[in-house]
Amino acid sequence: MPEGDTVWQTARRLHGALAGKVLTRSDFRVPKYATVDLTGRTVLSTVPRGKHLFTRIEGGLTLHTHLRMEGAWKVYGRDERWRGGPAHQIRAVLGTTDHSAIGYRLQVLEFLRTGEEERVVGHLGPDLLGPDWDPERALANLLADPARPLGEALLDQRNLAGIGNIYKSELCYLLGVTPWLPAGALPADRAAQLPALAKKLLEANRDRPVRQTTGVRHHDLFVYGRAPRPCLRCHTPVQVADQGDGTQERPTYWCPTCQKGPAPVPGAPQKWRDRYRRTPN
Image 1 (cartoon, rainbow, N blue to C red):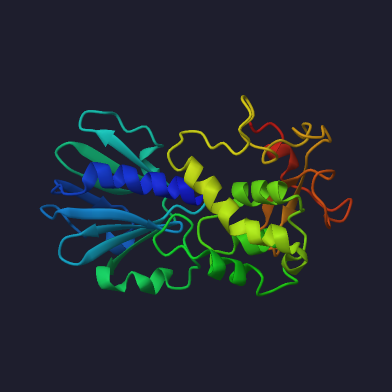
Image 2 (cartoon, rainbow, N blue to C red):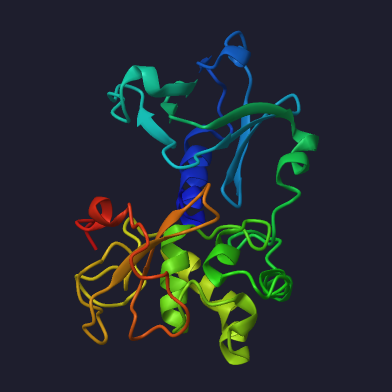
């Protein structure tokens, strides 16, 4: 699942290419909207909300999309070849005289009345990159279930919106605790740091082509994707295990020396290890 900074960058690209332009082509390759034709309408804006994207079109209409795990929006010049994937993976085409915005593998694509956008995002917590950011509320949400593992609480978009699996692992590393530590057991001083640290990471990366959390040349991330390579601080091999409720497990990385707290039971299945072992840092 993409991080909030990725969605923010996607919204900026779409807005830059489409906002204020009249659509000369629209094509929605999902059965429910196959007959929708927006040609002749002006795109007003594209804005992010957490990991949701709202493309607003004149007439009070909004195209709501969500990338989920594998979706992407690509923007191409008028004569540029589309390179985001095979044609059968295209779910949406929005074209102007200058650009084409192509939605690949979009897991959510629907039309809403613009005044009804809150219906699909009203459950979200404060957005780390949005105007509604509220650090006190975000922290209160995270600590509302003190027995819940911190990593799971961070991924729950109802607590705060914008954190994905990469930032979950990196934040826990920077706080010096494992993602399996109960949220209520997070020391008070580190809990107080968490909202500001999360916002700092996302804001620092929203304009970067390559995500970076370390400040160390040639090493973009502290732990995510690094198993079984050595920790950048203590040289202990980074470990990886699944974390989740059994239906949405995520590969989770941590350093057993630098991070204190519970860890997965030894010998538990770790189906992500081979897939992620060679992930570039």
